[in-house]
Length: 163
Image (cartoon, rainbow, N blue to C red; front, side, top):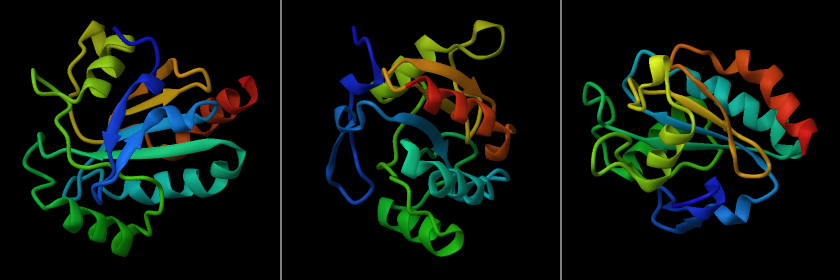
């Protein structure tokens, strides 16, 4: 059983290994994303958080998922191009993963276990569920899909100062 987000590995959207241990000491905002969702414009707000707080130690990490309404059907390359061209996304994007069920990526299993949602349910309900992770790799907070990135600024600033 893992103790921290930094115990996990993922694969970047262009196929390179991404060891989360390389982010040790940083604050992470981990988000399940989709290119064709009503919340897709949140990419702009997430990119703004990355631009504003990245120099202070925030890393935004997007994990595309096609589990909700088939709203991210493209290949990893298509998703990367869409995010870059339409929203100027420069924060790290991982390859498409599952966030629910037996095939859920181990990181997402950990995040859900550490910070269950409404009424203690672990399942991710929709795209753009967000998890704020402290510099120690512990999950600080879970945000609903409709929580706009701008509204996370206070919590992000507190997490950055805490480290």
